[in-house]
Length: 237
Image 1 (tube, rainbow, N blue to C red):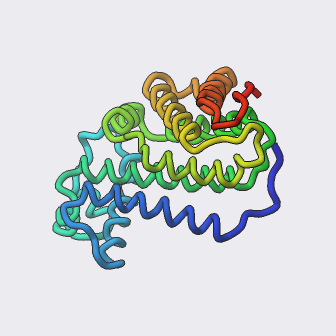
Image 2: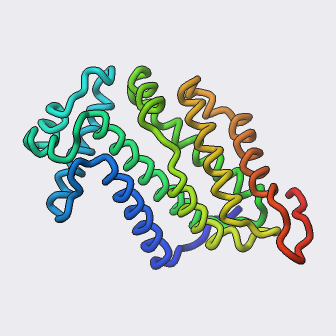
């Protein structure tokens, strides 16, 4: 695996737009009223920023409420209740935005690399996901448990968007070539493993044997499909 000198801006911009559109689509499911104007979206973003800060500073979920988030965001409680029915909806949306940001950084990282084998791809992805999830342990143990147990959902639409970009941009050079469905399956599995380890013992995410296990799971997904018509069965890399 080597690092590329640069990435075409159009590819990066287009991907970020797709991730942002997916986030907004997911966000509107939790909103009482969908923002129509940029200023309204700014209000929602300020509430999400405030929620992120409060989750780091607050020991337990029970100490959070919409009034606290509104005060920290510098908006009125009425504005908070206009868009969110309760603090749970606000936290869930905040977590989804966090996941969207992870996905954007993940793809930017992948697009800066050159891979020769599926094994290279699998180990790079496993290491990135383990490090990203492991970095979330800055909040209190009780808060992390509450967030990941009740508000962190696996985003299958995002998995497909991210996988489509990775396969078309960096997977084409790998032999045998990868497919979007295989990558999306493997990514979803790795997200689930990382979530499980966060709830069990986040320290395990820093262990090399865990990285190797995650890479093996992804590699199995990449190698697991039937061959295309006229294509020889994929040999393990």
